[in-house]
Image (tube, rainbow, N blue to C red; front, side):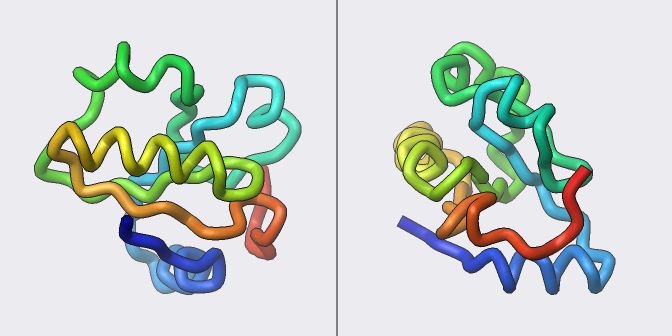
Length: 98
């Protein structure tokens, strides 16, 4: 499974890179604080919302600690998507939060 650190994601965003961040936490968790610009697709709904994703784009998966995003990453990779898990999740995130 491909993995990326929170520090690397933060640096890439600060450098103006456009990342496709998918936060797989539940809606209430996301409303409590999230990385600006994310798309929220709760883990339980990801298989039903695959049509919203593009297999030609890379995705970085985000959750609270890296567990659910790891599951989402593995699932998306099994479906032919380019997905990377953000290790440590929002607990390790030190960048901007909305």
